[in-house]
Image 1 (cartoon, rainbow, N blue to C red):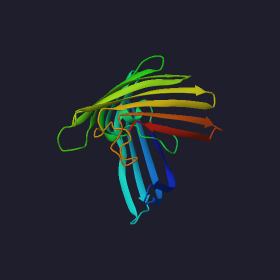
Image 2: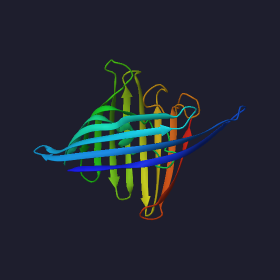
Image 3: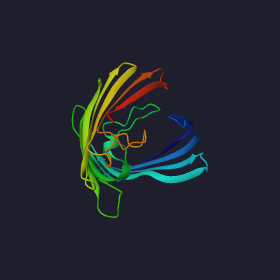
Image 4: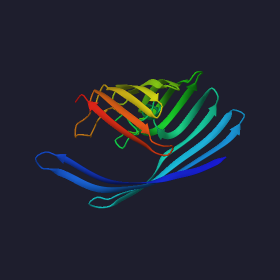
Length: 239
């Protein structure tokens, strides 16, 4: 069984940083993404291979083009859980949900790296994950250890995940609360990072700083129709 999909995305970006120099910039961004998802049934469960390629173009002083493998992993899926090996958005980024889901997705400790993980699926919407992820900072065996729990119900979801960065010996944690009210859903993420130089730092580079210790990201979405939704997100940083 093979499924092929993808999308094309275009953005026009304008940023005004204010200040004495009145710095501002305008750029265009375009992306083509191709997804290939192949699955086969085995005596141990469903064997899955997934690849996600991206071709990006960004206008700047000199136009830049790039092509890269954004995700490429193998999974063995059975009713009790899933083993994943390969390059992926890390569990800390994806397991309890990404950011706001709006145009401004927020800063939430996103990372994309090689991982070995096991996701446990229990009853009544309960799941958990444990993973080792590649730190990607040197040729040495530096890694992050991540683990989380999540509960999904018709009314929404709650979850928490933590990670430890062995390279800089620092850690981060975040929690999610999400609620559904018919066509409207709201949620909030709460973040902590013990240091701005770890892979779990929040807010690094957004305002030219090195990151914050605490942060809160809140969002709301309204489903207008089966194919259209509107969303808003806002984030507070303690630094």
